[in-house]
Length: 124
Image (cartoon, rainbow, N blue to C red; front, side):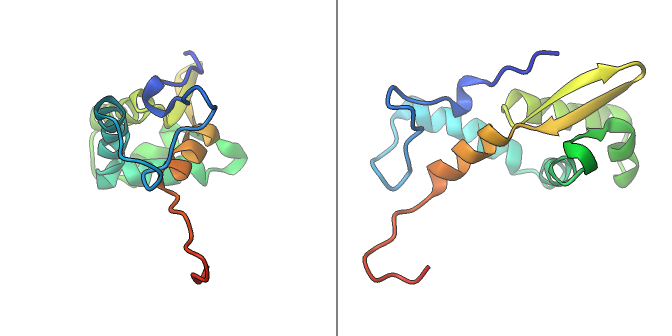
């Protein structure tokens, strides 16, 4: 499978994705970001992302993810697909199993969007 990143977390011409507090979001940018936040807005997907991000060696086999939930394998696969479509994780098939890893640059860009400027004298 490809290791491409979706335009959801793409950069603008200055190489920055812009912060929410810097200027009001354009309508199309808000729609793009909403897709990512929607993917993160489900507790199962948030747990999956956390499990993948904290996995040994930076990746996790789907065979390790499925038993952690009281959900069917197709349901877990659907949640993982949504995380991939949001550009947060990627995967690769190795024989029978699929291995997932987080795309750190995607999380960094998402964090940059949420970063608020500090007011002078504000506590860290």
